[in-house]
Length: 141
Image 1: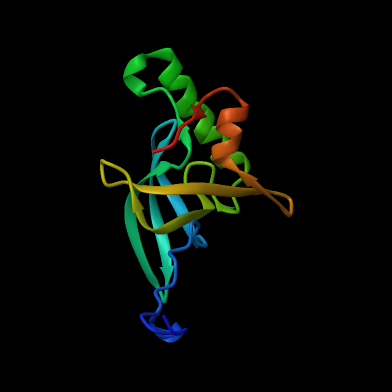
Image 2: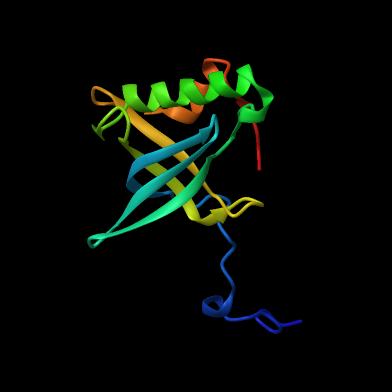
């Protein structure tokens, strides 16, 4: 068969879907902590527009509140991390950075996010700290 016969022109060849998409990064006020891996936030999406949404921390699983002491401890630890590493706001309504993939949600419709705070100028992953401190385990949704 002659070269080029049966081949699509290069400009019509579909590009492979990337395995990883760059994150969307937002400023968020954490207005509620439901348990050790779920929060509600007022997310600043830019252009003076904000939205309230419930989010699950990506890559971790913490005990539910209904488990008693383990759930309560995980929830309180998350609140403490948010207060310690916040970039603004107050201890009760900390402001942090959230990173998410476009429209990535889990089975209950919650956005999957990494919460990032700062220790001075150094970024800190709240998700990773929850695992490091034994209040959550790694979990893939």
